[in-house]
Length: 137
Image 1: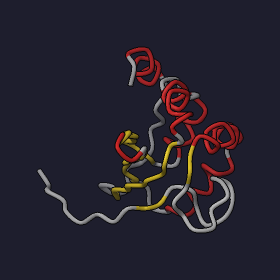
Image 2 (image 1 turned 135 degrees about the horizontal axis):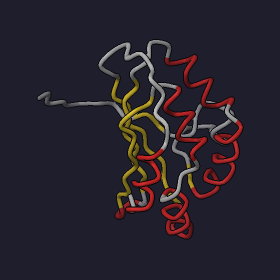
Image 3 (image 1 turned 90 degrees about the horizontal axis):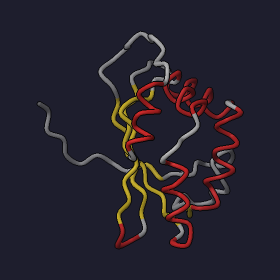
Image 4 (image 1 turned 45 degrees about the horizontal axis):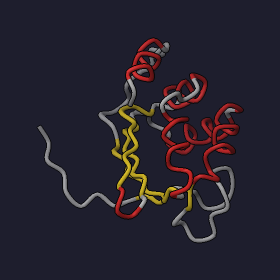
């Protein structure tokens, strides 16, 4: 994350939401189209405040996306600290800024989810990865 993006992110309001659990770790994977990599990085250096707000409102924290160059993979990792995952994810999907964000970024990606057509429709866009090891503390 660029310094300007980190500063902008730090200045965003973080709603005082009740922490309902220690969090469910989520890891997801999608492929970035090589010709869109630099554009993808550029837009993610300045994620729209409304999109970040929708994620926070939905109890998503510690969210990061990593690029794995040999295979053009984007690997997302986040924690969900709410207690109604389905409802909170629906709230993100209903957010107008998020819909515009997905319209901007989906074309930069290729989904591994069979039958996926975009973030707004179908069976999902990012493929969930199974956790096979965790070390606590």
